[in-house]
Image (tube, rainbow, N blue to C red):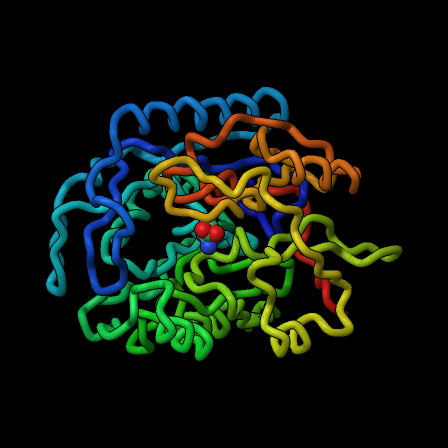
Length: 366
Ligand code: NVA
C-alpha cells in the first residue's frame, strides 16, 4: 500500500497532515532567535480559536475534497528541555508540519530545524511516521543529522535590529545568525518542483544544510538550487515568498508567484530559471497589510495557500485579490476562515504537509 508519494504542491491531493495549536509557545531568546514579543504560552483563547479553524480545515478537506487527514500528537511543549549542549525553559509547538518534515517522493525527512526551541518538534509526528513506515513498504524515513545547536553554531554578533544599516549589510551578503559549523535546514525552505528542489539560504537554512540535501538526493536524479531574496530582511521559509500556482504543460509555461517586496536575486533568477518552462510573476497583494495581533508572520501569508489539485485551492476567505487572481487562472477557490491561525507560525501551507498526491516525479526544467 503506497501512502507516501508527493513531488510538488499541485498534483491531486489524497493525504495530508494538519498541525495543532495546543501547548504552543513563543520561544524564549536563544542564539538563533530573538522573540519579537513576550515569550511563553499563547493564551487559551487564541489556541482555541485557531483549533476551531484548523478543525474546520480538516472537515473541509475530508468532506469536500475526499482527502485523508492526520493530526500530530498534542505534546506538551510548554515543558522544559535539556540536552548536553543547551537547556530551555519551554519549547515551541506543532502547528507547522511543513517547517519540520520534508516529503520528497516516497521519503519523509525529519529536518534539522535551526532553533533550539524546535529541536524535538518532529516527535509530535512520530506515531504517524511509525504508522506510515509499517503500512507503506516503500516509505523511506530519514532523520537529517541532528545538530548539536551548541553556541558555536550561531553568529552571536548578528544585528537583530531589523531597521539598522548593519543588518542590511549582513542580509545582502547572505550572512545570518546561523553559521556554517554544522548542516542546518528547516523543511519549509524547500520548494519542490518535481526533480528540481529550490532551497532558500536563510535564517533557517545554511549552505551546509543545502549541500547535505543535494548529496542526499543526487543519486535519484534530483537537482538542488540555492536561492536568495536579498530585500527580505528576515528571510525565513520560502512559502510566502515564492510559490507555484500552475505547472508547465506542452502548451504553456508554468507560473510561480514571487512576493513583489522580495524579488529573487537577479543572478539566481538567471542561473535557475533562464530558458526554463517557468514564468515568474508578482504575487497579488494581500487583502490587508494588517496581520492579527501577535502574528509573527507578514501579511504575505496571503500567498501561503494550499493547492488541492491543479484546478482547486484552499485559500483564506478574506484574501480577495489572491482568490480573484487564482480564479482568473481557472483555479477554483475553496474559501476557509483561517486568520486566527496566523498567530501560530504561518498560514494554510505552513500548517499542512501533503503526504500523498496522485502523480509522478517529472522534470519541469528543460
Ligand atoms: N517569511 C515569512 C514566513 C512565512 C511562513 C513571512 O512572510 O512572514
